[in-house]
Amino acid sequence: MAKKAFLRLMAVIITSASLLFSSTGECAEKLNVLTTHTVLKSIGEEVGKQHVSVSCLATGKEDPHAIQAKPSYMVNARKADLLIIIGMEMEIGYEQLVIDGSRNNKIRFGQPGYLDVSLNVLRREVPTTRVDRSMGDVHPLGNPHYWMDPYNARIVAQSIAERLAQLDPDNAAEYRANCADFMRRIDSAMFGEELVKEFGSERLWSLALAEQLDAFLKEKARNDAGNGWYQQLQPYRGKQIITYHRSWGYFAERFGLTVVAELEPKPGIPPSPGHLLQVVQIAQRHSVPVIVMEPYYSIRAADFVAEKTGAKVLEVTNAVGGQPGVNDYVSLIDSAVKKLKDALAESSEGIKQM
Ligand SMILES: [Zn+2]
Image 1 (tube, rainbow, N blue to C red):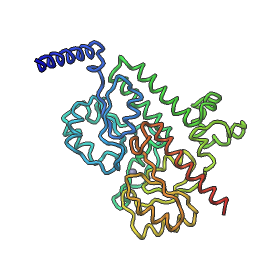
Image 2: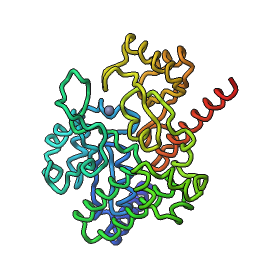
Image 3: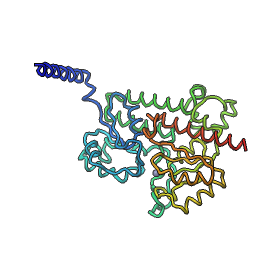
Image 4: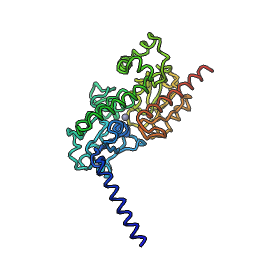
């Protein structure tokens, strides 16, 4: 008897649940968005909000260059209305396999359901000569790690908003409004609310892009105003750092840091003893205070250089979900800025005391 009553109760629950979903209509109408990187998932959710269901092939804890196609990816891609990729060959190892395996024509290259968000971003390190294998994993379209520049995150959000608007015109205004909100959050985080109010974000960005913002703020006697990412790293402009992979150039350039060497002899080629000895010399010559590496690399090479030079090894993720507390795009940049700032402050203290 008890079992019968339980089954009846379950039937009631299921019926009312399905009534609930169908009455709001949201469940059935959500766009299925599939991304290859957790940063794209985060921005996709910010822009699409309740109208999208975003999933991601990666977790944020893996090397994005080392991802390989899995059957589960193809299952995931089968129901996607929109596939969003980093582009610039970041997904070259598995993209086509996943699309072909999904048998989902909506997400094929050239279809509205295929979005490469690199198309409008500010690109760096675009080779001017022919790229061949001897150069390591150099991408002919430029360095694909562009999302660590918050300016590019704004561009990515706009590309996503426009594509969602195209696929789901009924909610176009909402996608554009969500995108504008996201950009405002980035701008406030970047320059501090005070300066954004005073000068407007477009002006601040165009000065920053032209590397004239420091001079402008000095002229206005506002160079100590605000506590954005920009101001937090401002005292360390010109500092030289070493990174494991060539993945920090966009971040470094945006915040005025210089990458003087990488632990990898060429992008994607693991550190060799001979190369590491050269890196030690460079680190000593430039008194490099910090070695930045993503947590998915082995720490041995960085420790070797650190031991010989006194540089500090800093594990910093460049993916959402890559480290505790990094839950969305803003907290990703927030965490990278804070870690760099603390390490560079510590090293400046050390130099003062000597
Ligand atoms: Zn790379």
